[in-house]
Each structure stands twice: as structure tokens, then as C-alpha cells.
Image 1 (cartoon, rainbow, N blue to C red):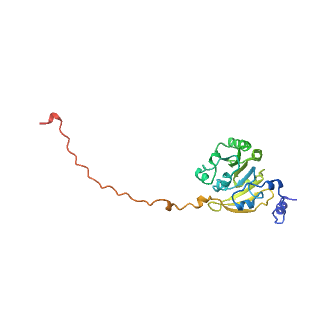
Image 2 (cartoon, helix red, strand yellow):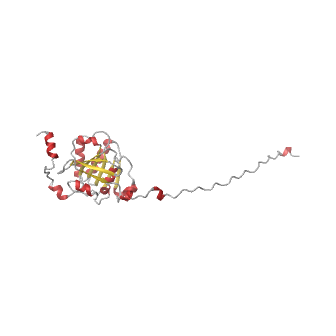
Image 3 (cartoon, rainbow, N blue to C red):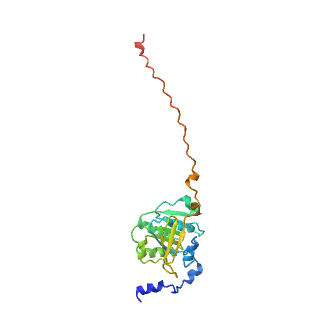
Length: 248
């Protein structure tokens, strides 16, 4: 059977997709978004291993997508690696993220990837969110990250540019993300166990406390002008007294 024929067969609505019974029995981690839970074959994120998020980087809403995970009750630390911007501690705290268990890591490419592998495999992390450093990531590097995350029972979420969808990956779950509007994400399944590519949902990922923020004019006091002090003319300057030897 040719590759084109196989793709046509997989795209048919009457094709039955088997599911991993072990994975289904354990279930996934809740995503915090009901529509996304319904989209994913495990009913949520995988418990551990590599997940790829293919998006137009830096994709600011991406951090909001994983806020429920960061604030979850899974034991272990959370690590954010190579973020495009410094995460707001206030936003994280108001979302319920335990800041005492949160680490942020930056570094040069090779050292960063090595540190992420060691952290994921250490059994000390429950979640690692990594923005891929510049340049292509070899399949061997992806496999190593996936195996390390499985060994350490860590969920490793890797943000990669959309063009990486053309590269084979050992990640069981690959999702494509688009930002149709501020604070919103369209999630499309690129690959998942027991799922059909192309299924999608649209999410509002902006945290509730940011959606309820009042307009700036309601929180700022009205500006008032201070009365200017009246101008006072300086006293006239008197001539200096003559030296003692010239006095009469």
C-alpha cells in the first residue's frame, strides 16, 4: 500500500482506531480545559514522556495553556527552561502555582539540553516546559529527552516551531497551536495514540483574574493640577560697602 493510500485510509471517518489499554486505564493529567480533555485520547495530558507543542514561537499564550499543570498537585518541582520572556511571578502566584517549587533555567544550547535531560530523568520533576533552542533538534536528541522523561516519570513539554512538524519525532503526542486572537489558542492534533490527526478545538487560555481586570481608567485617580506659587520679585541688590582704607 502506498503512503498516499494509507493517509487516505487514516483520514476516513469510518476507520476504527485502537487505543493503548494501559494508557487508558491510568488516564491522563487533566489539562484544565474541558474541550482539550475531550480532544486528547487519554482524557488529558500524558503522565510522563515527551509532548511536542508546534507553534509560531514565541507563542505567548503557551504559558497560559500549561498554567493548570504548573498549579497542579502532582508531587515534584516544575521547571521552565529557555522561556522567551521572564515569567511574571504575580501571574503565576495568582494562578495557584507554588513558586517555591518552580525553577527557571537558561543557558547555551548544548548545556541547556543536557541539563533538561538530566533534570527530566532525575525523578525530581513533575513537569518540564522547554522552549526549543535555536537550530534543528536531531531525532536522537528528541528520543533521549523522551526516554529521560519516561525514566524520571516527568512530563516534558517541548515548544518547537511549526516547521518541525515535517520531522519525525518519538513524541507520542504532537499538537499544533495557532493564536487566532489574544488569549486564545486553536489546538490541532498532529499525532496522538489512538487519535485521528486533524481533530481540533479552540480554547480561551487567558487566566480568569486577567479576564476580569477592570479598565485602567477605573483604577487610576483623576489627575489634578497643583496651584502654582505666586512669583515674588527678588529684593534689590545693594552696592557693596567700600574697603576700610577708603572709608572717610
